[in-house]
Image 1 (tube, rainbow, N blue to C red):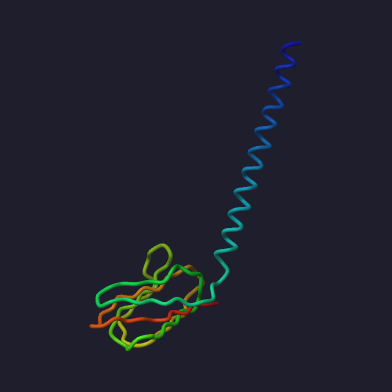
Image 2: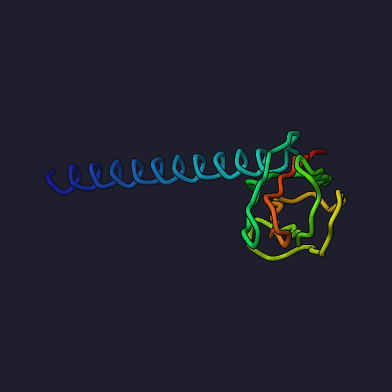
Length: 128
């Protein structure tokens, strides 16, 4: 009689562990889907970026396919970069004017290094 009670309890314990494991897997899958869905929604906005001579500044990382930037100060020489969120440079160039780039949908951030002799500022727009 004792053995039957032990087996029954053991079977219930295994069933509870399976239910718990199934629940954990379902929660993890739901979170993964939610993260994936959030990451694929393109941002639509702009940020102000400003730096002193020889200093870098950057936007936050955003999911977008179009990036455009315009001076908010008098123009000057600078180097711009478009990084993937992984830190890999996707594109870059020297410039002294406004710019734009179209890219495959991904999470990027725009970064600049001021090569002028005065403070430079940009409004950086991203979308779609």
